[in-house]
Length: 123
Image 1 (cartoon, rainbow, N blue to C red):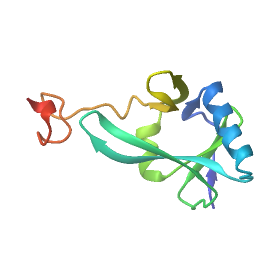
Image 2 (image 1 turned 120 degrees about the horizontal axis):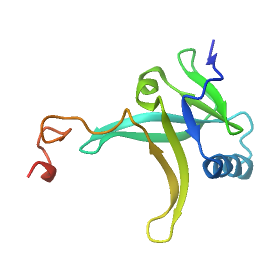
Image 3 (image 1 turned 135 degrees about the vertical axis):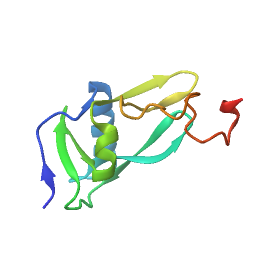
Image 4 (image 1 turned 60 degrees about the vertical axis):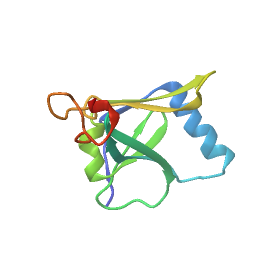
């Protein structure tokens, strides 16, 4: 059974919560949640992805924050603990969600490179 918790693992800003609610309403997606997951790693650390989802698994953790249901898989949970999600509307870069997580920052070696030197960040 899907584990539901009330503890705030991830903080969702009022702007991000409203954006999610607007999307769900616009698309008539009743019963859907915002799934947040690790989508890869790069020089800047862990990268996150998001999707609207209604296919919950027993190993998922779900919780409500700011009126939005979030779902996180077991692998992504450690990277998202303590994270915040915001929605920004930047005139130059456009509008979108931003995830800031203390557990997703680059770590790497002495130079902080996560990719092992396969990119220009190591130079």
